[in-house]
Amino acid sequence: MARRFVAHGEWNLMPGSMKSSEPTLAVAGEGERLSLEGVLTLPTLERAKAALEHVRKQRTSRVLNLSKLSALDTPGAMFLCDLRDKHVELVGLQPEHKALLELIGGLQRKVPPKSPAVARWRQLVIQLGKGADNVWRDSIDIITFVGRITSAFGYALTHPASLRPASISRQIAETGINALPIVGLMAVMISIVIGYQSAAQLRRLGGEEFMINLVAVSVIREMGVLITAIMLAGRSGSAFTAEIGVMKAREEVDALHAMGLRPIELLVLPRMIGLVIALPLLTFFADMMGLLGGAMISHSLLDVSLPQYLERVRSSVELKDLFVGLIKAPVFAFFIATVGCMHGLRVSGSAESVGRETTHAVVKAIFLVIVFDALFSVLFEKLGL
Image (cartoon, rainbow, N blue to C red; front, side, top):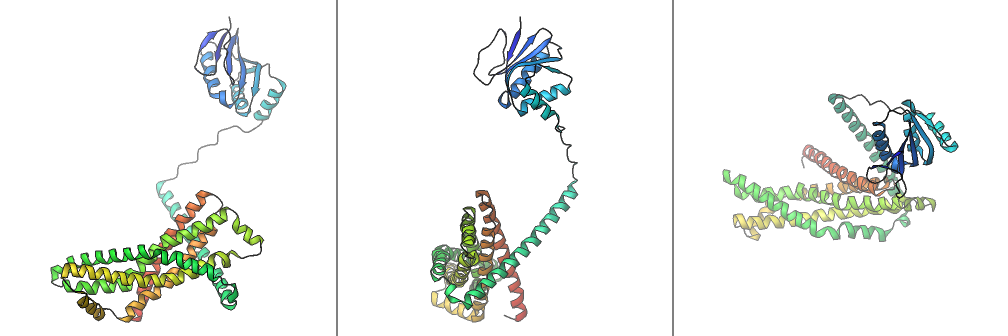
């Protein structure tokens, strides 16, 4: 009696035929031969391998009858070719199955060799090289994009009609007015932290009253503009990248090109001008809120009244200190907008690309803000400001 193994559902070895839902594949023993019946396709392939191995353990037949095979696909044909390479004779092939086997058999089916392991020190060198190459390429891209924006801005100055006041005012509202609460809160909190930490250190030297000088100067010269720029890099820079990136993914930017419009003038320039106007105003607002935070902490720790605090601030802070902070703001705003819009135009068309470019834009913008802040500090020190 023929014994049949059905490669569908649970594994059973039973006499006679077994009825099951498609796709099914049965491995049967017929005298000195084995026979495949049913469908040998990807859904039944793994179960067919296990079934054939189970039956071959009980008999040493080297002949496989395929006359009752009703369907065969490419993975199944590759499996049969592997059996033929192991000196298993395939008989009863139908013409269409035989043609598929000949096609698959003529292909290079060898497993590619594993790539040799790379030493850790070489991996480190490779990563450093890739990082340096990425930095170089990004620097070239930023310089190129700055040139394009400068050209568009020069054209807008000579042709004022090309400016879009409605778009610029909207960007000022989005990046400036709507950011007032979070910028003011951050400035107050930062000044309180600076006040607490400086008071704790100066108390040891008996100079707690100099805490007011330290808070006022640090907020006006550095922390006000730096915290505001970092906040806008994460808030507005990411928004620029996401907005333009979604337009790029929806092919709206390509539609602008098709209509003869330049995306630099339409999408980038209003955002850049709006942020360049908004960031100095936000910086001044952050400076005032930082001084307010300094007044609160001075009253709490030193019991200094508001008139005394204002007099101390006036004597410790000069007008040039305020301008030092405000001069940095347009430069920071320009590079935040440049990086955000550049990465938005880099989006390739998928949601993953939008998220990746947004992350890169925020990280790069914050990095550039810190780098330029350090360069400004050196420059002002050399100029005696």
